[in-house]
Amino acid sequence: MNARWIQLACLIAFIGVAGGAFGAHALKTRLEPDLLAHWDTGARYALFHVSGLVAVAVLAGSHPDRARAVGRAGVAFALGVLLFTGSLWALALTGQRGLGMITPLGGLSLLAGWLLLGLSARGLGRG
Image (cartoon, rainbow, N blue to C red; front, side):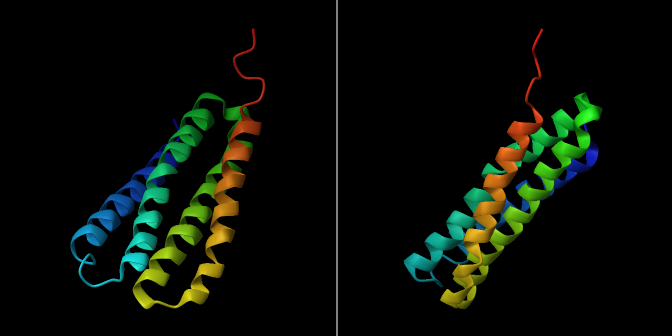
């Protein structure tokens, strides 16, 4: 396994869990329900994509010949979490709806991560 991808996955998992707990406890009475929902969505999506980063680590470690291609998927996941979760959390804390324009860019990056990961795994496991 590639330790750096595992470390990044663990960092994002930590941030997702801590952020989710912060939203559920500290922000529950301070934010409007729609803003709290944005916060929760950001935390959930960060946690969902930890699995993608773990897959990147496993695939990069077990198939060094594909590490570069797999690494592109990891970068897309990391950028996607930063943009998607970051913009939703910023929107929730500030109420600035314009920040929501960044969120789809993060979503596209997350989608690209899954596509790139799938493409980099093509042909594996064939006889």
